[in-house]
Length: 340
Ligand SMILES: [Mn+2]
Image (cartoon, rainbow, N blue to C red; front, side, top):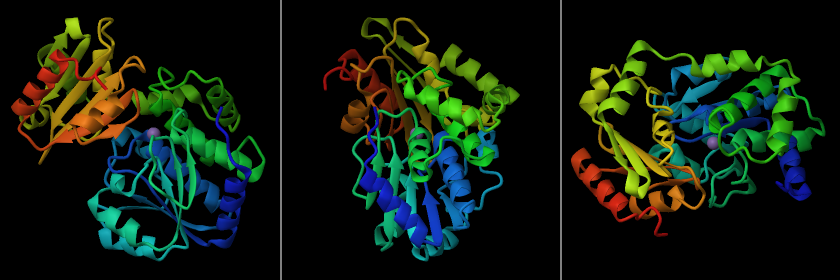
């Protein structure tokens, strides 16, 4: 299903051979796939004796932290100068799980734009920007699936070390909602089968990733569904909205809203849904769809300064929460999410 050009693989192999200092970068608000891809490529290159550092734009949810706990990384939001110098000082850059430089945040975007080094893209988002070597597969379940396929071709082998395999598995698991979406192609199961052969314990990894709620997080979920849920049966749509004050009341920590948007899709009579959460200076929006005919990537791009995938996308607004709620309600009533 995914075609990997021999020429591209050859170019990447040469680049890795001739580079010593290699830097990895991923998107702002990194998720399991972003961190998984970063950790897997880190270990792969480390095993080849390279000087590798992973740049992570900002902090990440606690539950996926174990994936990167033993790699060398710089959190750019905490140590921006260090991150910048590292990038500018590298022989090449590998860009993971993002399709454009601005996805790593405003400050890093400038550094990436000015860094005059070879840039490699490994990703699964639509419409990638121009990079020197590109492996972009929107039909892949996760960037980690793309990474596996590239490494497999680079080294002509199917089974990698435990260190490389574990983060790839974690990335695919999180980006498919534990194999519930973006996983209709049989190839992805060949990939995870080969990953498990490295000795991973799939059930333990699942527990570590998903059964780690704090009491407050579960209470917030109950409140969100019980009190802040809007359902539009006629339009087959729903959304949840949470203000800053509410998040504070439930001792919000990064990652606590992970997956909350998907609860709306559990309704049989919902094809489109959204989660609105108020942050310091904006309202963050996540969109989900149950059917490819409802393209939330297009919807997020057109109306909410965002984008992503056909069935999962993000957006943002700098207006007040009640204004955003009103606008989205109007869009739902007019079925704008269908009018592409
Ligand atoms: Mn991803």
